[in-house]
Amino acid sequence: MVGKYCPDTGRLLRVLDVGSRDCNGTYKEIFSGPMSPFIYDGMDIDDGPNVGIVCRDPYCWPNIPNGRYDLVVSGQCLEHVPMPWLWIEEVARVCAAGGHIIIIAPWRAPYHKAPTDCWRILPDGAVALLEWANLVPVEIIMERNAETFDDIAQFGKSWGDDTLIVARKP
Image (cartoon, rainbow, N blue to C red):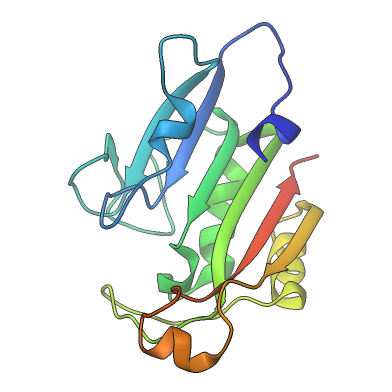
């Protein structure tokens, strides 16, 4: 997925991982390694493992300049954001023109307060958020990871089902 939206430009690409604190895994490995074409920064509202940038306000990241990142990724974070329309504006602001945004958020999952659990994201909601922030939807896929809701509720076979959102900043 990352290779599809981050072609080899001959220069290092800056990546921001929003909601990067390692609670149960991170995306850092994807963007690391001795030959990696990426410069990875992890950002979260609280300090902790895999957090290099702390922005306490989820809707205002003053220590990150406009258009700094070629790619902004965020996985399993958006559902915890009380006002996602404000959050997506900051995501768009820190993304460079022509850059991409990849967000993974559940559309079906059990309640998991960390510290809040506010949303499940469906394709139409994803499009509305992207349009609000003047982002161009590129690909939106509802992934099926569980057979039944019981699989999810029992944390058995899998966690749940996710919406994969890919957008571009014009």
